[in-house]
Length: 256
Image 1 (cartoon, rainbow, N blue to C red):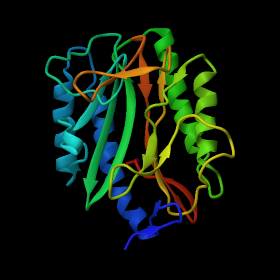
Image 2 (image 1 turned 120 degrees about the horizontal axis):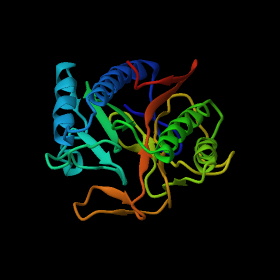
Image 3 (image 1 turned 180 degrees about the vertical axis):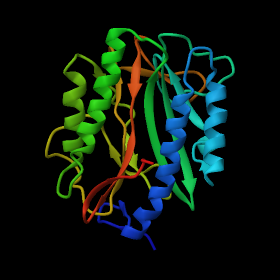
Image 4 (image 1 turned 30 degrees about the vertical axis):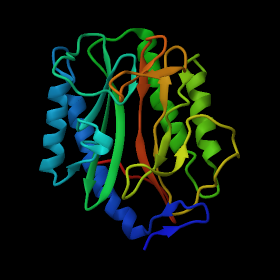
């Protein structure tokens, strides 16, 4: 029987969180190894196939493949693509590109979910700053996960870091709860006001994932029904980790 709080958020027991760590570990390994083969000349299709091989060799099931009809094991979002890019034999990475790779694995019915944006060779200084800033924003958000804090604390910390250099924080896509479903309540915005929103409590498991654009925060969905890109076609970065709040404090789930 699922334990829910008064807001309907599913709270995990310590044993369930321990089980989720294995899904997180496999997701993190797939992400790391996929990132290691990023280079000019490789297709996003090849990266996808490699990530699937890693997940299956670790005893997992690709969490994204078939989810809502999505065709890939990874989301492969290149340059101005924010999230949900579909792997393709026709998309060949080149020097100066960036690619956000989002991976998820299922182990014993539990989901892991994480993402990272990788440079392809040497990238422009402003784009490098975008990646560095979004990574810092992720860790600023993670640092707010403690009992009694709020979702607004997470969003405000991310927003403050991301907007300092003049970057745009995406509003339409946010983080989320995670467990036996990849997307569970609550939504975890990457913007907000400190002290506002739902209070965090032991047993909450969250996927925190800032999506930050080099230019405008405005985005649009492409005709394929999945890929989201920036309205001004400037680059976007996406970093994500899943985290659990335990009685002993926060624990990153997506780590090897």
